[in-house]
Image (cartoon, rainbow, N blue to C red; front, side, top):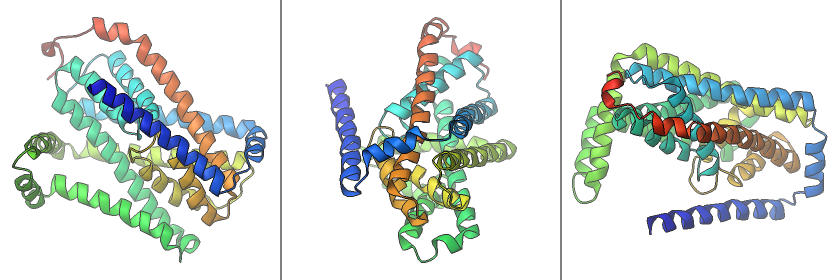
Length: 331
């Protein structure tokens, strides 16, 4: 029954992606032949550079996560970590929202290390540092490029919401007074399970308070990932012949990334394209070109995810045979 429910949810969200794309193409009058023509005539050298940058970001992301695993003294074989991370890349692209793969790599590595709380904490902190990097980049870019979006409340509101969500998360997790209040609110009924999960996560994250150097390096890696992701899309735009200030990309793309975390579409497909059109129209970019940028960027994600899926499958036999006892994992 649970499997059937998951299949139904998956199909519904796949349907949402298709509907969003159909509505976008219909109401924005996207010229499909023109869109395909734009993609066909891209500068292939620039497009290749953009793909290399997109690929490099996954390598940076791997070392960002491994840094956290090392900090909590979880040292499974490198091949095991690569397999879990590769599976995460695959499922991030093909599960609803872009965090489904985080669950997969958490479960995969937890089963191997027998340290689920620590692994989940590293995955959560890895995602959180990325979100912090997103907000830092967008706020700094907003400061530098204020003249480009001044008088556009439809842009400022999403920035305010993304920033407010981060502030709430940080306060709930790291402010003792607010954390205790939330705990009391969750201390009854079914919420008890949520309360225990929150307490466990809070305890594991508290461990990192004594590893400030690791957290700082992790944040630097997050900022680097954000910068590379944004420049990747900017280079894709150049390959399409778009010529607008790079600051638009530093302001808009992190917001789009945060919005596509919403679990309403498969890998953010459909939602991402709609957001590209909505935001980049403010920079004077034609809707056709905005959709082309998004689809080309998504194609890179799919290719890297397919490679990740192959790595995950090819290491499956290794993962099943190499179930080291917990005592063999450094504690």
